[in-house]
Length: 376
Image 1 (cartoon, one colour):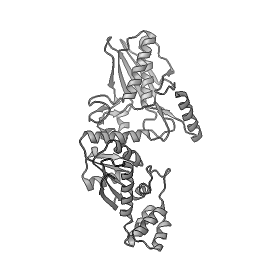
Image 2 (cartoon, one colour):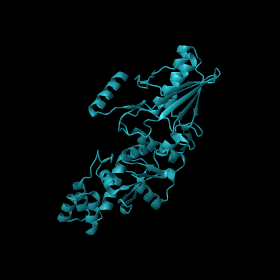
Image 3 (cartoon, rainbow, N blue to C red):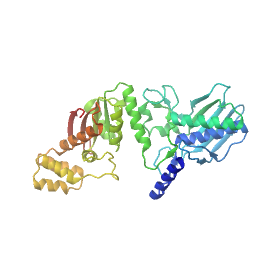
Image 4 (cartoon, rainbow, N blue to C red):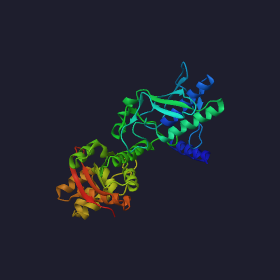
């Protein structure tokens, strides 16, 4: 099955011409395997081969190695994210492994550039290094396998570090999620699929988890920094209630359907939210377009005559449709906000989440609002 899945993914990537990559968790596992092998055998395997959760067996070249005095070894791997625009592409991930007394088990430490969890709501306890559960399990299994092959006990301290990780982490959600000091070691499959945006969507989910753990009853899904500022100004929300939704409205709504928060504000640019109003859950320009015909129909419902509706249908941009309608007293912004709210409630499928919507222009001026409405 794993081989069939891998073959299917390979065929799909071949069709797109994009190259897949490896998660930080896979790289940390490879570095850990090489370092622990060197501790038991005196030699670093290079390249080092690991087994991913679905059975694939990639090999990783070592970017550095050190067999220290006593019972410590370090191996490093450079992360290759393939053709995905990942901020950690090219990062050097290091594993320093130390032998522990029999019965101590496997202990994880955060080295330089790896964050520490400081808020509840994540899948790790407060105070733990930000090494996610699946990468931890991968490292444990590989240490166990090496121990079985080379006669070790499998008791080890694994310290993961990332060169310049604290600096790179400023471009991620980690500070907002309460992961301080560096990056998270992530990955559930070990493979980075180009433009799958899985890391962003996972960050949205963790943002909801952190907000719920903090007792927040109102969160805001925002398409960007300008809409985020507007949501804060309108509702006075704290930082841990803000979800950097980007284009992934569907990810926010589907996760809240399973993990509800009492109220959701959706805030974003008029053009993006007009796509949500038309039923699109991915708001990226390459995957959905502003439907001027849909906007013209909304304008008619709001009182536009045939001439104005035709002008809306032929407008150059979404924002121009708002301006045209405003000049004729037609509240297209409010109509789009209400339609977007209704689409969101439909995706929520009766989950106990009330929704309101704020549409803005590029300058951050509110051009449409729909007040809070509850489950359907």
